[in-house]
Structures are given as C-alpha cells and as structure tokens.
Amino acid sequence: MRNGGCGRQIGAQPSWVFRPCPRKSVAATGARQVAWIPVAHLDIADLDYFLPDGRQLLDGVSFRIGDGVKAALIGPNGTGKTTLLGIIAGDLTADGGAVTRSGPLGVMRQFIGQINDESTVCDLLLSVAPQPVRAAAHALDASENALIERDEEPTQLAYSQALADWVDVGGYEVEAFWDVVTTAALGIGFDRAKWRPVRSLSGGEQKRLILEALFAGPDEVLLLDEPDNYLDVPGKQWLERMIAESAKSVLFVSHDRELIANTATRIVTLEPGVSGATAWIHGGGFASYQQAREERNTRLAELRRRWDEELAKLRALVLRLREKAKFNDGMAARYHAAQTRLAKFEAAGPPQAVPLRQNVSVRLRGGRTGKRALVCTGLELTGLMRPFDAEIWYGDRVAVLGANGSGKSHFLRLLAAGGSDPEIEQRPVQDLELMPVPHTGNAVLGARVRPGYFAQTHFRPDLVGNTLLEILHAGNEHRDGMGRETASRVLDRYGLARAAEQRYDDLSGGQQARLQILLLELSGVTMLLLDEPTDNLDLHSADALEQAIAEFAGTVIAVTHDRWFARGFDRFLVFGSDGDVYETDTPVWDEGRVRRAR
Image (cartoon, rainbow, N blue to C red; front, side, top):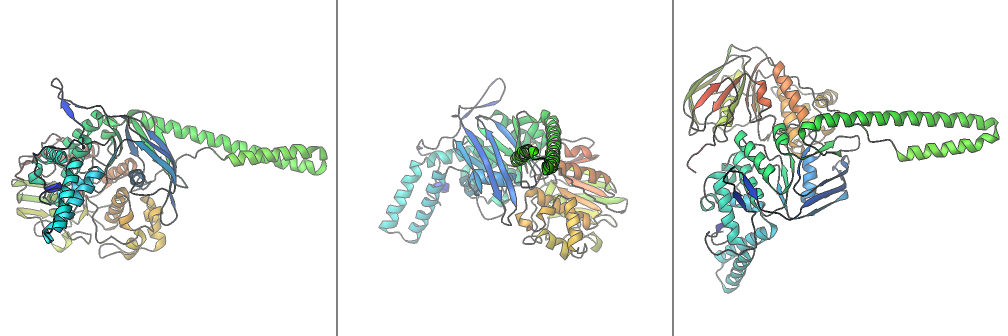
C-alpha cells in the first residue's frame, strides 16, 4: 500500500477519531504521567473450558479486575493462562460462563517476539490497532491493488471511498502515532520502519514495539501474555515503569518474580485441580503472596479434615440408627432424619480442595570432559561484536548478559553447532538445523564436549506434529526410544503426564520448555547451552531447573535476562552495547541498547 494505510505520508491534517493516550514528562522527576482514562474493568464469571480431547482445563474461573488495577496472572505451566487470555480477547469460546468489560481492549499475544514470517512492521502495528483502523487499512490496501490492476472509473471510485474511510477513522493521526512508537522502540521513524520485515527485529524489539503502541494507545484494558519475554533487563525495568505508571487496567502473565513484585497490585493464581483449574485472587502484592497462599492452603486442608470427620460421623450415625430401627420402631423417625441430614451434607459437597502440588524433578547428569570446555580465540561474530578471547573450564556456570541485539544468541547458536570446526563428537545432540553464524576467529569445544541447545523460541520443526509419547517412543541417534509406561513415568517427573497425548505445537510455552529440558536430560549432554530457559517456566519449574543446574556434572552457558536466575552463576560474560565483550564476577544489567544503522 503506497498511498494510504501503511503507506500514507505523515504530515497531512489528521482526523480526530483515533485518540492515543497522551503522556507528558514531569520535569522534577522525569516520570511519565498518563492522561485520565474513563473507568475500565474486566469481569470473569464462572468460565469453563474443555480441551478437544474432552479434558476440562478451566473449572468455574471467576475474578474481577477493577479500574486501574495491575493484576498478575500466574500458575503452573499448562493450567490455561494463555487459554484464559484467549477467551477474554475473543480468540476462543468458553464452554460456560461469561466475560464482561467496559472500555476498549488491547491485547499482546504470546507469539509476539517470535514472528518469523514475511509480515512487516506496519502489519504488526496494524494487528494491535483498533478494529475500525484495521478494517479501513485492509480495505484501502485492497482497493489500491485493484486500481493498479485495472485503472477504471469503478476502481477509482472505490479507491476514493476507501481513502475517505481511512481519513474518517483517523488514519493520518494513526500514522503520526506510529511514527512516535517506532522512534521510541526502534530508533527510527515510521517511514523508514514500515516495510521492514518483522523477522529482522529481535524478539525484544518486537515486544517493545507492541508495548509502546498499547500503552500509548486508546485501549483502556490491556491483556499482556508474557510481555517481559525477550526483553533485556533495561527493557524489563522500562516495562515495570510503564505498568506501574499507567492508568489503564492491566492483566498480565509473567513468571518474572521481580517484575511481579514491582508492578502487581493483585495476583490471580490459576490453581490446578482434578477437574480443571480454578482461580484464587490475592488482594495484595507479591511480597505477601507466598505467606497468604500457605495460610490459605493450610486453612483449606483444615476445612477438608473437618468435613471428612463430620461425614464419617454422619455415616456412622446412620448405620447405628439403621441397626436400632430394625428392632425398635420408635427409632425409625430418627433414622430417616439422619439419612436426610447425611444426604443434604453430601449434596452440599466438600469445601474447596487444596490445589494439587507441582512435582517437577529435573535430572540433568552430564559427564566428564576435557578441562578446557571452550576456547575462543579472536572470535568475532560478523557485524555484532569486536574480537574477544575467552576460556571456559569444565564445570563452569557462565551467564551471558547484555542488551538485545548484542550477539548473545548468535554466540550460543555457534556453540550449539559445535563451534568453528566441530569434530563428530561435538555435533549437537538434537536433530536441529541451525542457521550458520558468520564469524572470524575460532570457538573450539573441548574433548568429549557434547553440546545440548535450549532454543529461546522453542522452534523445533523436528517435534512439530508429534505427541509427547510419540517423540519419546521414536527416539533418535542420541537417545533411545521408550515404551509407553517408561515414557509416562518420565513425563510425570516433568509435570507433563496429562499432556502426553498432546502434540508439541499444542503445548503451552512452559510445557514446551520443560520438554526441551527433558530431551536434553535424555540425550547425554555434557555442555548445556540455554537461551533464556526461564522465560516460559512457572516459578516452581524454574526452581527445579536451577537446582538441576547446580547438580549438573558438566558445563553450563546460559543467556539470560532473569535477575533471579543469574544469581546461581559464578562467571558473567557481558556483551557490551559498544561491541566489546568482557567478563565480570557479578551481573551487569545496565548495558545500554545496541545502536546500529537501521
């Protein structure tokens, strides 16, 4: 589209229909204030949702997000957090219950950050624009293409009407707004950014672009599915400020404890149950969450104990009175009264059950390798960093830190392929087709080093279309196949037993992450290469991974922006924003964003 929608030139007089949320700086503090927004809320009432295989995922989920509330939605992987957001957004239909809200809704879906198709920056911004803007842009695009193919009076009139409709929805102002957004997120204006393929942006840049648009846009209620994924630490700190200072009502999914602690005024927990997940709402922040949850679970356990005791007493009473009524007609009335009382008690049902406990057990074994696990000599990733030298020894725990776009993931991918000139034993233990990483210098893996790679995006074409049982049953040249019973036991250790018949591509991000770790466990790796492994893991699973890394008899190199996870490492390789790579004894989180010609 060259003359309208994504292609319209900025600068013409805008229509005043699209109204972005204005912000103004406060000179004394530098903080951003958001203009007043009308009262907005979100009500979730008794939502039920069944999976295609008939299993119930959500069981009567109910909660309310009031005006200006910042609520974190947490819970074990696979309990339905993304599904719940999909129902609220209208992408999925619930099997029962209702969703009501006031105010327009803005949605960041989980896949933002891993787009790898031919869509453009303009397409991405349109995807979160108000529906009238999207409709007008698509109509204008279609009419322009028709005009190019056949320049006749009907197509000219249709194009003129589409152009007028674009003006009517505030199209000029939309593009002026997008200019502000792309400048803030990418450092370039909309005219330069609009045709850029989204796949050329880093995951963090994709996230930042959408977050800038949503927080500054007209939507009054925001649904954010793991907005912190792919953001570096300065980006996460920026996100914390945006959430905390916004007047919008925000419901967000995150596993980052620091982000939750710094922003959430309410915490909604999806608790796994026998017949699906239920919701528990903690009315305070994260600081008081764990204690409140333990006290609640203790209270629920006590209520259930008392209920069981009362049930046993009533049943015993009915049995005694039944025996007495056999020999004493005068006891019949008391017997029938006891029966009625028992029936009413059982009909009322037990109190809410204590949520099922997670039991994730990771057993990464490793194995002895040469003393030098990795030697980098004059290594330079083309266009990303200056040459650097490094030696990593067997048993080291190295966290790779730095801003997005500094080359960290490329570095890990080079090692995952076996380094500069890998021997057969150093080839990856997965059936991965890794894109070559242009570089000069050398990265040489040591003797008996078998790299195992955890992909940040979970993109595994070798697993797509297969169920978890099929994946484990088939095996490959790096791991033996398993029978159904053995595979089920292994999946149960990772909290994946209930998902055994699901396809890999139907799993939640956290479930995919746990399966990746399981496959590394089974493949006999001696060097773990982990690219943002905790991004999609729930808190309990992240704890289990951290413990497994501590016990792993091998070398660990992990790219991470998780401030909590990084505390378990003893060396820190920092990719600076100026292209330098250096080592520190403590984490460095203040590296600025990488600036390059765009």
